[in-house]
Length: 501
Image (cartoon, rainbow, N blue to C red; front, side, top):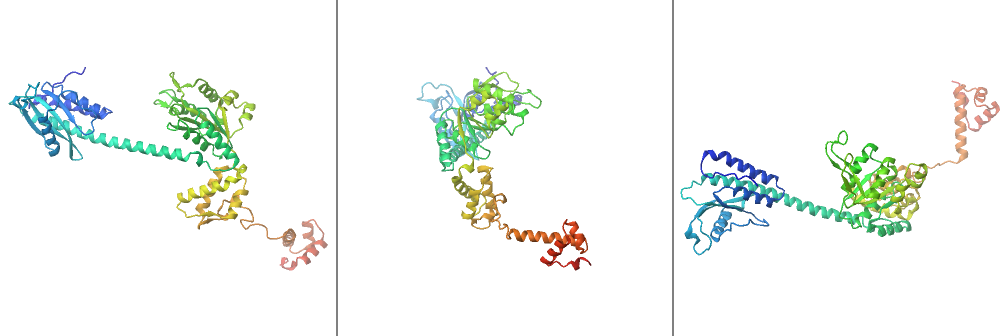
C-alpha cells in the first residue's frame, strides 16, 4: 500500500514542496517503468491520491486499455475533443443542471483538460475532475497539470521512438535471418562432385534431428559452412548459432568462455557473465577445432553431454544445457586417442553422426564452380567488371594440389581480381605459388650442353684472372693439367693476354 500524499492544488506556498515531490514521483514512474501503459496507470493512481481529485484520465493514441471507472460524459468528451484540436487548455464547472437526464450523477465538479503535445502537435489530453468549489483559484492546479501533461508528452515521444526502433530491429532481424537461411540453404553448398553430393545428403539426413554431429576434414574445406547449413535447415533455425574456436582461446579462459562465471569467482570477474553454453539457449553450439580441447575441459564437456547440465565457474546453481551440439576437427581423433591426448569416451559421445568434408584435391570437378562463385562475389565487392577466367588459368587451377583447400582457392581468386586490370583473369594474375615455369615465361631456354659449356668457360676465366693469365697455375687451381686448360682456352676462344695486364 502506498502512503497517500495530498497534492495541494490551491494557491498556497506551503504546498510547493509537496507538489514537487509528486512531480518527482511521476517522473520516476515514467522513466523507470518498462511498459508505457503501465506507467500511465501508475500516474493516474498517483494523481488520484489527492482528496480533491475525483478522477484523472490520460488519453493518448494507441493506448490499449483505458482506466477503469470515472466514465467520461458526452459533455466532457466534447470539451476534450476541442482541447485536442485547438491545443489550448480548458477549465469548466459542471453543476447539477448539466446532469439533467443522466441517472446516478449527483456530484458537482470542475473539469480541467490539458493537451498532451508530441512534436509540437496535440495528440491527446489529460483530464482531471476536481471537487467543485465556487471560489477555487485554479492557477496552481492548472500549472501542476500542465507540467504533468508535458512529462507525459515527452514519455509518449520516447515510447513512440522506442517502439519504432524495436519494430525496425525486428524487421531487420527477420530479414537477416532470412538471408542467413538462404545463404546456408543446401543449394548454396557449391559442388557437383559425387563427394559433395554425399555430404549434402548427410546434412539433409541429420539437419532436422537433435543428434550431435561431428564434422571432419582438413583445414579450409568448409566445415563451418556445413555447421551453418545444419543449423539453418533445422527446427532450431530461429534460435542462436553460437561458435567457439577451441584453438583460439587460451586454456585459462576457455572454461569461463564456455560455461560463464559468477561475480568474484576469480581476479577480474567483476560481474556475472553467461557462457557460450548458456548463450546458445535452444539453438546450436558449434565447437570448432574440438581436437585442441585441453584434457581437463574434455572431462567437463563429457559431463555436459551426459547430464545435459552445467555450472558457471565459481557458481553452485545448476543450469540446463538445451542446445544442440555440433563439433568439428581437422585432427585424427583416433590417433589422438591412441596417444592419450583425447578421451575415447568423449569421442564416442561426439561421433554420433559423422560428416567428412573431402579436400579440394579429391573433387577437382568442383574447382571451376567454386572459382566462378568467388569471381562473381569479389568482382562485386571490389567493383571490378571481370567476366571470366581464361582457359590456361583454369588449367593452372585444376592442376594445383590446393593444400589450403577452398579457403586457399578463395584467397587466390580475390588476389587475381585485385591485380587484374582487364576483363579476363589470366594465369599471370594468379599467385606465384600456382605459377609454373612455362606459364610465367621463366622456363630454361638452353640445352644442357650449352649450359655446361657456359659454366666451364666461366670457371676457366676466373682461374686465369686469379693467376694473371698463367695457364699452369690455373690448371693447378682447377685440379687439371695445363694441356687440358690450353685445349679449353682454344675451344672457348679465351684471350689469356688480357688477364696479364
